[in-house]
Length: 281
Ligand SMILES: NC(=O)C1=CN([C@@H]2O[C@H](COP(=O)(O)OP(=O)(O)OC[C@H]3O[C@@H](n4cnc5c(N)ncnc54)[C@H](OP(=O)(O)O)[C@@H]3O)[C@@H](O)[C@H]2O)C=CC1
Ligand SMILES: Cc1cn([C@H]2C[C@H](O)[C@@H](COP(=O)(O)OP(=O)(O)O[C@H]3O[C@@H](C)C(=O)[C@@H](O)[C@H]3O)O2)c(=O)[nH]c1=O
Image (cartoon, rainbow, N blue to C red; front, side):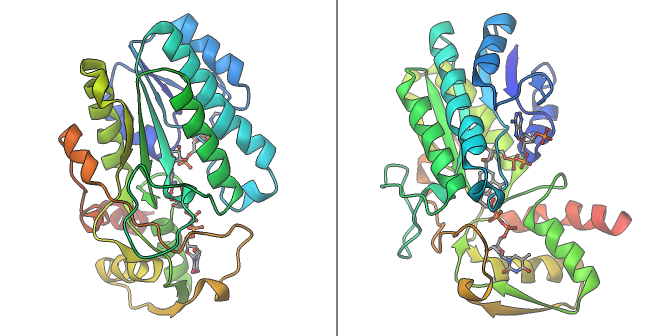
């Protein structure tokens, strides 16, 4: 049996149909703010592999709750990875573009220096480091700008705001790859099988949707596919102040996905079901 930490999040919900026999541990069963209890669950359930699909993802709130976010995003993945190493089972963990400072206009390689610009990114970086240090066979999949029909995400925010207003001001100097949660779920399953088969595939991978765009361009495509006549005005980040600083350059070089037999998904092909759900609600 495969154990998935997380049940209600975007990626966890996309994992459910791919892994019908997996055990999905919700917060009530495995609270990541209590890392020892999460590690103990591995010893109790004795899974053949583990995927961590839960995290503290409230980027702005993390500025005020860095200690809690550190337990959830830093220490819990470390404790889970140590338990995986002890049991000799592989682990897949998900991380973020927000570990990068985001300077320049290049696509980041997995081995590039990290320098998180905010508290959420610092806690995710700590989780990555703990997983690498654990000795467990692992895949760390860094992704960005996740969206799906479930939970909170930029696509659903835009559809909601676009139904209330005729024009929106959206940041145009942050560039990255919107990523469908379904593609991340597929990569989790594929990478878990790959590292179980070949330990040499253990390491850090990048997965983001193509093409890279600004948040403003992302919004325009959402409204275009939704047939909504909402004017999107490009603004610089400075005109949309937020508690957490976001990286300007979130481009991820995803070429190492080839080692897993995967490629970047075209995110534009994943918008329609979300738009239809929104229209029906
Ligand atoms: N969302 C994004 O844009 C991006 C996400 N990522 C990473 O991808 C992974 C999956 O994210 P995503 O699917 O979007 O997550 P969501 O934001 O959709 O959901 C977060 C999940 O984590 C759970 N969770 C939060 N705190 C705890 C806790 N203390 N104990 C147990 N569970 C907890 C939530 O449970 P509950 O329902 O009980 O609150 C929820 O199921 C994460 O590692 C995230 O850092 C990377 C890049 C971008
Ligand atoms: C609502 C709104 C947002 N924005 C900007 C703010 C921000 O720069 C950008 C996206 O804002 P959001 O708060 O939706 O996204 P944010 O929470 O920053 O999303 C991040 O989540 C974490 C978990 C990750 O790991 C990242 O990869 C990334 O997906 O859009 C506007 O410019 N205008 C608006 O009206």
